[in-house]
Length: 589
Image (cartoon, rainbow, N blue to C red; front, side, top):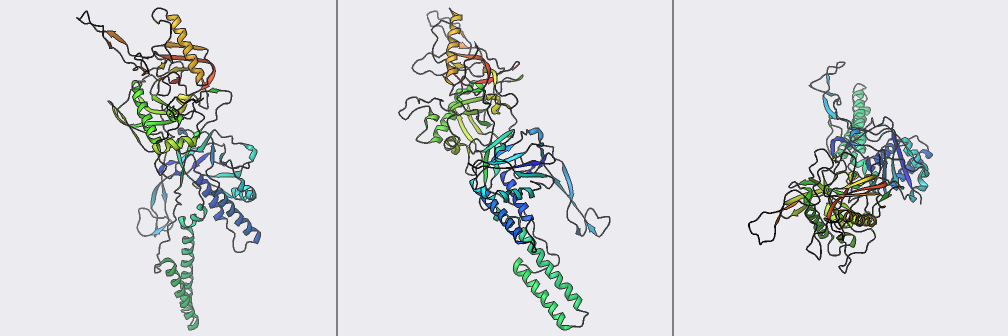
């Protein structure tokens, strides 16, 4: 099926364009609508003159047709060079001279002291993107096939995208040239990291009215006609020919009448030219950045594209409150799903029995500050890990109403953690600097070194069954049986068997509490009473077990695989509620 890729490169290495939502920030990724308007500007600016031949007029009309075809292709993917926050340059305020004017001002023009010139502060946000090309890619573009020549001509006319200093070279990329981008952004409302102005039908035809350029041009024509007529009247005064004088005054009268009819105002010699306006594109589309997963690396059944919810307000949550936090988020998701909750969300079939799904169901995970020198284990947010067989559209249907408002913006979700307080979560912004809220931190899917051989639990793994060996009497046998249970848990999420498994009550990651709380016997004077115990230190509360009052064993686990694997990794009986969650481990973490 024919596709379409429009490519461009920034000739100076800098993209100079202002984010429409923040005048002090550079726009990145580039909005598809901005690229389209660059094409439209090139088309408007190269309109054939009155003396142009028929071929030039036909080519110009064909270029308009191809722009209208692009309007109907839908949202494109963005294939861009890999750019991080450090590439955005510091904002420098520049004082720019505005148009010359008569009258007093802070500064005069040296050559013509009667004219004055004021200076106004301006900023030109820019981002360094290098020499790699950027691309808009439509996977399905059948309608463009008959317009390729016109599109080639139009792309060759584009000289800038954004500010006039943002010089570009644009072309239609070959079909077989595949995007060689460092990152790919796809249209995605639910897990969107950025909202871009979208290309929509009718955008080309709306631009003249939005910018007022035709009105400005017509205003200039009307004023020029009046001024020409005034010069003729002045010239005829000394001629003595009353007929010519009358004709000149009549032309002046007609010119002023035309001005008044078309502007709605009486003509004044100092009438201000209508302001040129920036076009407003109301339709926006959410985009999410996705990374190609190396084909040689194994990954779990959970999609590595985690949906991150950052805590915006509420009490500071400790990692030991994981079960309360994930249970509250699960309730919110279930309520948003309505009456018929899909089995990939609830984990249960329509008859109430556990769902028999190869890739499991939705997992609710904590995002704690761990593995750093001063880590204290407090939560910065929560994450949703989807089974990899659930499509993005299915995710959006269930979670969209909960996380996205009618305008497509992220909205706050308030969770009531009984006994702790209310916390507010919101979908993470794509440029969030916190590493804890970066999905790569938990999946190991970074571009520099994808995957990890070593993983360690940040929340304890709850064993699927009770070991038969006695931990106190035969520790070696007990640990071997626990390792076998853990191997089975790793198998269930689609990963290869680890070559090394270690278990302990203490986590390998700094800041993570013990797998269980330490307890000691209470001293009592009642010799006939059963001995009582009390918790003496921080640790995770026991995971609730069904059908028994006894708590299942829970331990911290270290895994070493023969080859790097991609996360997220969550194993054990509590893997869907935040227990048994792993983070890539490196020496010193």
